[in-house]
Image (cartoon, rainbow, N blue to C red; front, side):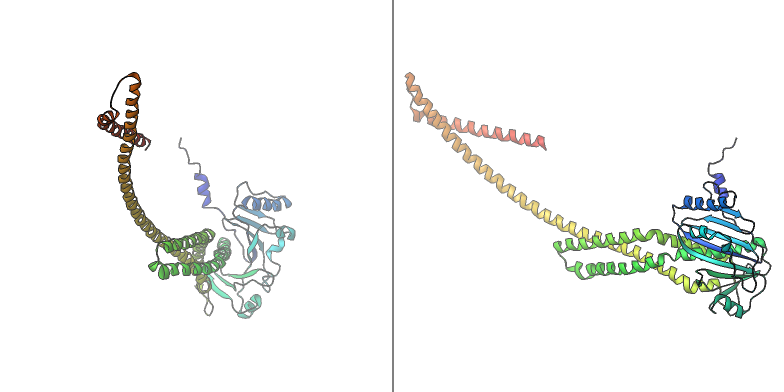
Length: 427
């Protein structure tokens, strides 16, 4: 029997995760994205389950990342992403004269909506109408004439938005159906809300980039001053101080990198998703209006470029600082090696002088010890007179000079060799 990999089913089903919800125009939808953090999946799932229980409907399965709740008068879709949860409410019908009146979010209990965990990063009302609006009605709906518009999905739909937050704290997107079909309408709405979510998530790193730019400027000035002004004419003591400066700046670079690496990495990922979703819209221009892609290129892309530039600048400065610190550390090491060589030469000279002095002292020691030994010989000879043995003390000392000196010299050499062997064994 063929044995499946334990992840085969899960990875295959991942391709079908979070499918678009079919929408029959005219319709309206409200989308909320709540930034609750990477560890809040279980909490968000449990809270959505309370809504299911309130209406006596099935709860999401354990470990589920999305769930569609059909209330009859509305459908509620919960989707869990890496660091946020998205809630989309769909309702049939839409007032053509005032499409953003009675939004879909009103179908949910206000207390439940108010209790959603996290911080709101996106809130969008979407109206899908069948009649084409005129320019005056668009100005009335958005409250300004700074909206963008485009054809989507092979010109089977038109869409308008102003990318603003209105007085009710929600953004607005107006879509006109031109033969979409229920599945294409669902995909279009999903792509538009994902563009809004990922756009804001990508830009979360922009304030971080601005702060990092100011801190990097301080580090760059310190490193430049060290390399250009001080390092060429510094001595060993100065090099040590400069090395401390560079080490401090390298540590500051690493601190900034640790603080920003996750957010900058997330920005790259979200920006890639925004770019792909814009392509998926299959957008064509409405004459006289900027489109989604054009607006993003003019307003959103420069912000992303700023984040990328700061990330690149941080990497380059970190590399430059580490190279300079390594260079300065090498200079310090070379200077210290030179000092150590001079010190060793001086120690060799001192050891040589000490050896010569020691040899001189050893010669004097032989003389001194021999002198006292000969004196003892004289005393011993005089003591023999007590037993009636007459020997001239002077003659005895004269005869004993050479043997005594030889014995003393040999004795000192023996002791010196024993000490040398014991020192060698210790090392």
